[in-house]
Structure formats: C-alpha cells, structure tokens
Image (cartoon, rainbow over all chains, first blue to last red; front, side, top):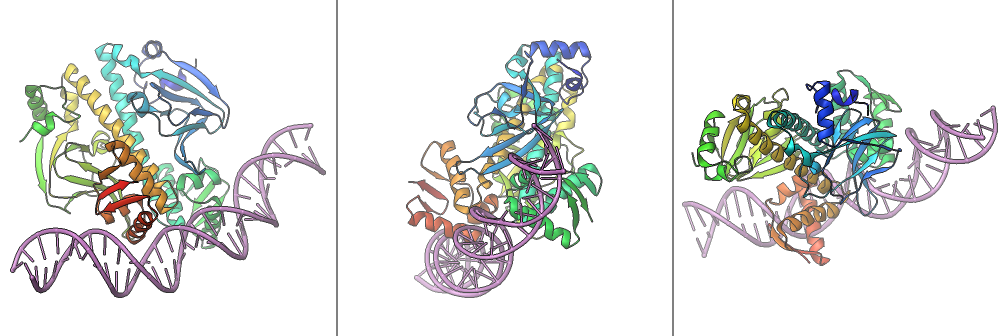
Length: 214
Length: 214
DNA sequence: TCCGAAATGTTGTAATTACAACATACTTTC
DNA sequence: GAAAGTATGTTGTAATTACAACATTTCGGA
C-alpha cells in the first residue's frame, strides 16, 4: 500500500512513518479500487470504516425515488469520507457514495480505535475531530450555495466560494455541467442557459469547467 | 450555575459531578441570557467557545444581502452549537445565531482543552467527536429536506424525518410557518398553500405546529 | 370581552423553473 | 479522419414558485 498520500493526510499528518504503519495495522487498513461510476456505498448500508481517497474522487449523493440526484459533496484525493457513519455505527447511511472517476479507497476500521494506547488515541481523536469539524463547514457551505432562490444566485454563491478558496478570479471547478446542476439543485439545461446569460451580461467567462469572474 | 442540564448533556454525560465542576472551571464556563430575537453571534465573528443551550432554543441561520433567511438548524435545550468555529478558530463564522425564544447559553472555552490532563482530554475529545459527528448528520438531513424540487416533496421529506425520529405518525414540530418555510427554503405563503392542499388530498392533518401523517 | 398584534391562510399575477426535444460541440475509438 | 458517443447549449411550453395584497384566525393583554 502506498502510504505517502496517507502520511500527508489530515488524519496521519504529524505521525512518523513507523507510527503510520502501526496505525494502519491496528485499524486493519484495506485497499480497494473502483471504476468510474461504480457505487462504493448504498443508502441503507451500515459501516464502521472510515474511508480515505488515495486516488481519484468520489461523490456523496442522495438519489430519491423519482430519480433526482443531489450531490452533497465531492471528496477528492487525500480526503476522507464516511466518518459520520463510521463513528456512529448505529446510523445507517442516508447517502450513496459513487466513484466520480477511477479511484482507490482505503478503509480504516474505527471499531479498533478503542484498543489503541491512550497517547496514540488522544492524538488520533484530535485529528478525527478536526476532520469531522471541517466536514461540517463543507456541509454548511453547500447549504449556502443552494440557499439563493434563483439559479443565478446559486451559481454566484458557488463560484464566489471557489474563487475565495483558490484566491483567484480564474479557476477550474471539479464538476461537469450535470454535476454542478446536481450540486446546486437546479436543472442542467437551466444551468447552461443561465451561464450563457451571465456571459452575455459580462459577469463571467467560462469554457467547460474553467471559469473567470469579471 | 445550574449544572444539571450540563451533566446530562452529550459532552459531560459519563463524568461525575466533581469532574463536571472541574471541567467547567478549566474551560472557563460563562453563562449569558438572551431575549427572543436577540443575535447571539453574527456572520464574520471569530470565536473559540463551544456553546451550550441551558434553556430555550436558538436558530443557526444565513441571512443574505437580499434579506432572504435560511435556517440551517434549530438547536434546543441540552444541545451544543458553534463547535465547528470553536474548534477551528481560524474560520470566521458564516452564519448568524439567533435566540429563537428567551434562552440561556453557557460558553466553554475550547482553547483550554489542551491544558487538561491526558485521561480527561481523551474522554472529552471522544465526546466532542460524537457531538460534531451527530451535527454532521443533522446538516446532511437538511440537505435531504431541501433536495426535492417541489414544495410538497420538501414538506414530506421533512415530516417523514420528524415522524421517524419521534416514532409516531402524530407529532409537534419546533417551527412556526415562517421558520419552516425558511428551513425548507420556500415561500411562507406557498408553504401554507401547499399544506392546505395536502390536507385536502388527505395526506396529512395539521393545526399550527401539530402534524399527523395519514 | 374587546382590541391590536402576530400568525396563518387564500388568491391572483408575474416571474422563474422543469422538462422535453433538439442542435451543436467536443472526445474517443477505430 | 469518420463515426459514435458524450457533454453542453438553445429553445418553447407547461408547471411551479415568488411576491404582493388581502382575509382570517389566534392569542395576549387592557
């Protein structure tokens, strides 16, 4: 297993190589690959493993009974997902997790955390706490992006956040049109249409997933 | 300070009375009262205190520049809020916190957690982790409630969750009409109208904030 | 009980969105 | 480079929502 990505992650950052290897053993780390589009978890699944994206990316999404998809989050290389369900194993998943591209996932069993010695445990808990807290802010962000009633407001709320994060008026977004539509909870065609209008109005320039705020 | 509510909370549950008092001292606990409608925190505030609701309830909300309010969460007696910002003190708040009714709040300084001895710290971190993780699921829930495109779908998604939580087809909700509208991101009048139609269609019965799913 | 304030319900119209259908552009594969 | 497949853009119509205006109900004081 390639531990270099894991070592630099929010969970293992600060642990030396020996410690990381010990932790991977204690947490019964397992690696698995998925093809783009593959379902990694289904709504209703009960899990106790924290998941780490070694390569590629995954989407956390809700697919309702009418076929509407809502993308709650996109988790990229170097990030974790499923913490909530791993740490609260009584809660069945309410979301689907889907490979956004070919990807490699490492599973870490959270049931084993209790068996770590106290000093290791306190360090790991502090890291886990940071991860879940940051995830919290991400979830809040999405609420802000979908809060505006109009499509244009949602697009601008989202683009503004990305622009602030990347500290530039020009940037790439990780979504294609359909995914952006599913993230912002709007129709794809309406999104395309609104992007065109925004370009005509001189607010933005965009081509594929490259955007520039004017 | 009345510590009975605190003792039974998700943070201090499992600590005995002496330990709770010690922790309250170590974390520099401070109590403050607010009148209904008062702003407890404003967007942009930087804080390092975890907050606990002793009495009453507060709303976590986003108010955009056009006067639209979005209620992200309602935090009731016995629950915590602002964990994310307390634990990541570099992140300015993106939300407003507002007294939903007269309430009493206890502030706990998270900068002091590092000064606790290791055994106390590991116990506290584990509790904090559970709190943030549960908050995570709450934030996800709201995304599900606002995911359906139609007003009726949103209402049903929300009522369904409450019904499952309370394990009954008949229950009270903690929102008035305006607040429910702000939570579901719809117009109040459209919400009222849709509730009427749903009653005519025999799907629900409701009066004020009491609901029954048929 | 009456009044006033606040909350909730109802309705009509303008604005927006959903959805389908189709056009165009871009990619991949052979 | 042609063909097929996928992604994106455009348009029109039906459905839904926003918003304002007003009606009705509820709830506390006076």
